[in-house]
Image (cartoon, rainbow, N blue to C red; front, side, top):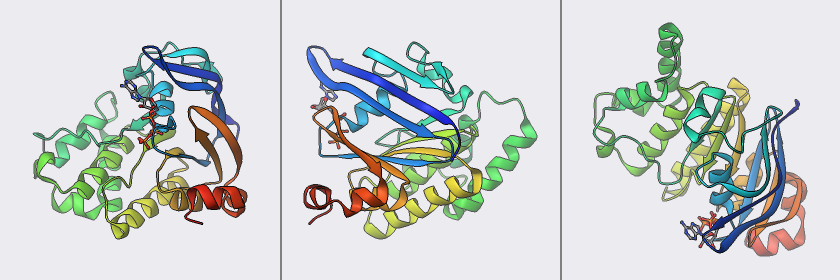
Length: 239
Ligand code: ATP
């Protein structure tokens, strides 16, 4: 694995007076897949939103490639290679599949490269090619999830933040999405920070994992070690 690409140092976050993150520290190294697992309301989504600057850290610092991004506007991060795929997908429903993909590359000036990446996205997700002229809003839930990931790839990210990519998908479809996430990591070298309810899948995919409970990191380890840990098995892996 490479150098550390993302680091949270003692990050806290609040929604009004409610504290949702309590001094969270974690790191992701270049080329890794790191998973954050935890129960509903543990603060997994808030962690990603705080990294992206959608929620502002009330304490601590967030370093990306060695520099603080704590006060960087969220819309500048894709241009720096840090791209989020939010929970709930949020594609552009009235634009076609191809137009959605073009929007993912809106700040790029290399038309040739954009075309190449569009072809790559269609290779990874053949169903999006078949539906390239169809409006995003008419795709199935699983197809919209694919489109959201493919659109993020159009910015040529160094690092992808994925929030619950399997949400609302059938087990078979989830497996397909996770295989593609692994392929993106292995073939493009994209670093991935993954937030996932399904701890089994999240840890089988990841190099390392963090366990969040009520806004705190309570455990961190290699993913294989977490999967073998009796406490984790009991609490998160269905015994
Ligand atoms: P889930 O798996 O259910 O999505 P999560 O681990 O991603 O859960 P978060 O969504 O980060 O958890 O929520 C962390 C805490 O912050 C929860 O207690 C939640 O109720 C609270 N919270 C989240 N969003 C808001 C908001 N917009 N306003 C107030 N409280 C919020």
